[in-house]
Amino acid sequence: MTPEAEGFLRRAIELAAAARAGGNPPFGSLLVGPDGTVLAEERNSTITDGNISFHPELKLAVWAARELDAETAAATTMYTSCQPCEMCSGALARSGLGRIVYALSGEQLDGLKSSGSFPAVPQDGPALYDEAKVPVDGYYA
Ligand SMILES: [Zn+2]
Image 1 (cartoon, rainbow, N blue to C red):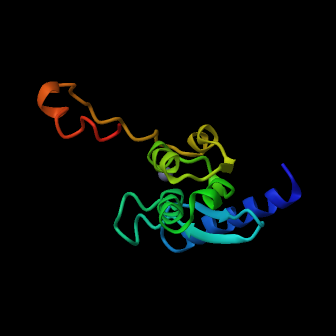
Image 2 (cartoon, helix red, strand yellow):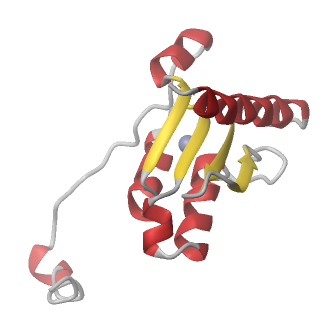
């Protein structure tokens, strides 16, 4: 880890502290572009915005996909106070961002929590393949 990268991680940790001070879970993230400038910053706002998806990593993944061209996104790094959760990892995979650097790992976070992670919702399927494939068939050709 370079001193520059540690500096960006420290900024993410500051954003996490600010999120907590503002009444939200303690997580923060930022995007650093190809030239080393900060493009955007976000904090968790799941409580104050009443939206379970408002993790900083997800908000920045949406921002990057909307605002950055593919080449810039691929050369952009997310610095985040904690390893992205499964929800955010899915969005980040679709964002085109090139790299993620995190401070706390998910495992380290779990060690700091008294409760476990969210239980998975049971899923049933697959079903109705012949009908369900009709709107999809050919879309991804
Ligand atoms: Zn998340």
